[in-house]
Length: 242
Image (cartoon, rainbow, N blue to C red; front, side, top):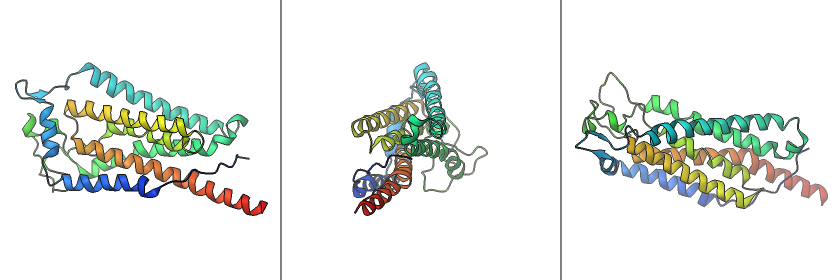
């Protein structure tokens, strides 16, 4: 039987308010040229390409190897979750592991379907940066093209921001470790986002949207699997004792 852990109080005004405010800000960002201005900072007009386009560090290490590392983490989480049904030492962590598996899975699975639906072009494909495609903002109609874009939201940013799931997994049992996991997720997602922006793969807003989605997925997984059920179980136990 799993140990009943009382969930720590959660300020939904904070946990939901920040991502909602960020989403509103991103929608308002559509009225500006911030995305294009930031992309221009990473584009070398003389060379006719983005400064990180052929970077070994950005492509082979921060893109390929880091992605492989997070895939490995997901597989280990899934394996550990499966073991929690048989290995007594993991019984008490089964629900937390399930929350992590769900958060990691959804945080990486949502990207591809949205890319196919939105068909937003990557900066490196646009005529402003040496490509052939016409620029359009997220909420604007897509110009006719034989090669629809697949660049919103930022896929590689999810490789880092999906680690928000670790924060929610540890939130009730290991608060200090959870805060460290939150910092790691934020830094990892930001660094990976910056790397892809330097390569011309994404605009700034693409990656911020990814952070918002990953946070909401982690929060939703936590609420459904740990917070709500944990609160109900503790309340039931206290009524029984009383």
